Image (tube, rainbow, N blue to C red; front, side, top):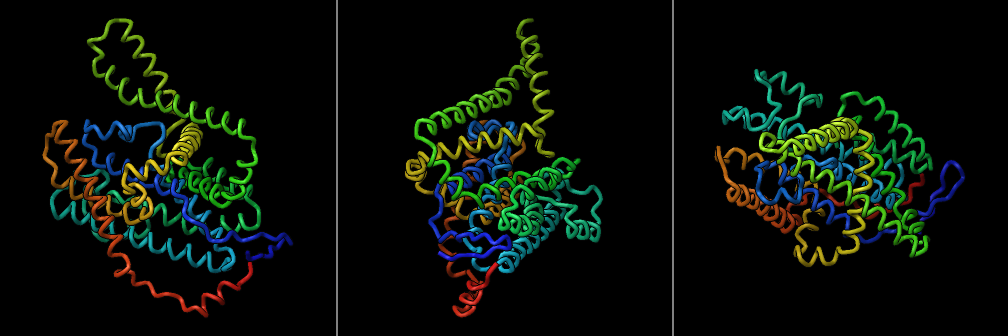
Length: 398
């Protein structure tokens, strides 16, 4: 156990290395599966019954942001002993990698859409192709294209993360949360300012994970059981309401002219209530109700997955966990699979074809991830740090 001296003359024990938390990998893998299904966007296909077609009050995208922040807090908390300079360097290196990947894939997908004469493959492509302008806007992160367009946002968040992490080390978590809330309140139409609050909440939870776990275990078992039931029931009820709005309300609107008077009245009131809810659940600007529902749904999801993680691993043959363990590769791979599939999709498809095409995309995602994992040792070109240097860095004090 390494002791670190902080400026406030408070000692903090660095967390020792620990095993991965399987539930986190399973949840990340699930989010990636949902993202792929929703990006293929062939409805109805049967698979969409598990995803909500990306139209629920909470989506897998928020979960991906939250999990990224959570793992930043959790993983780097265990590396405090290597010094704040080391943490800044590691996070900024990852931010640079994400930025380079974002630029590369944006330009790649833009070029492919233009040269293959398929401009409608995804919204957002410039009507007039001016390559110097496109390159400049891409480098400035004002233009993104393709299905890996979150990479530039992650790059920005990873660049800012060490500053937030420094506040956490200094036990100024309230300052980090306050700054995040102010940025969110001033977000306007900025996606990054809107979604950074999800990443920040994840980082706060991840950094304090061991303390939160200890406090939870200190609660009496009967009270823990009651809290779990309340969280799961509340999450289930709100999820079912949102789920019904996607599938049942859509069907009622489609059959509006065939409904009796009372059915049209009921549907109209439901539409009004749904519109009111969405005023506070906007996805792009991260409405306040969406944040609350996300934390509620994620908490319930974690409880369920944590309880049944062994059964999930068994019946999924570990494939969902595999996807979660290699999330960055899988996210990039999914963008390539979606792009290729959309290039080859027929104009009109039926339910069976939608099911088979989406299933084939999922199969490809799992297959390339298995291949990547098997080839990973042979393609890892990153040099290992000499033992003497590792020892030197490990002795640096905060």
